Length: 156
Image (cartoon, rainbow, N blue to C red; front, side, top):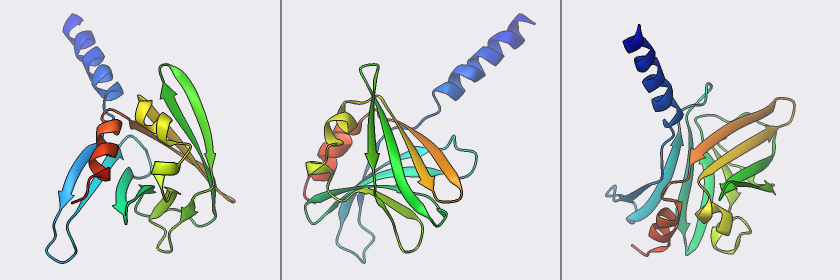
């Protein structure tokens, strides 16, 4: 019985730490100009897998959320950063891509009011609001967010 309880506690602890962290990747697919990309995965969502991504587009740092299929009617996002135990809240209009797979949070994170909290936070929660549907909640472990930001600022 004691072993079963210990196993259950271990499983619960592993589940609580199941959030990913920022991954830095150099992409050279042989067709496009090589580029750097950073991403973070939220696998704990019941409906889909969501990715927070950073990409350098002509010297501007694009910050967006990717999913296989966002619903039409995207309205806005509430972003909550946990910084030194304090919740920092931002409301962002953003925009949905034509194919419905991306929600662009910031076209240039470099000049965004989000940047300080993005780099300093331990966790990021994004609530995406859709007309007639309600909202979707995503959570990301922000371990390595400053390194990801610095990596993406580098020129390839």
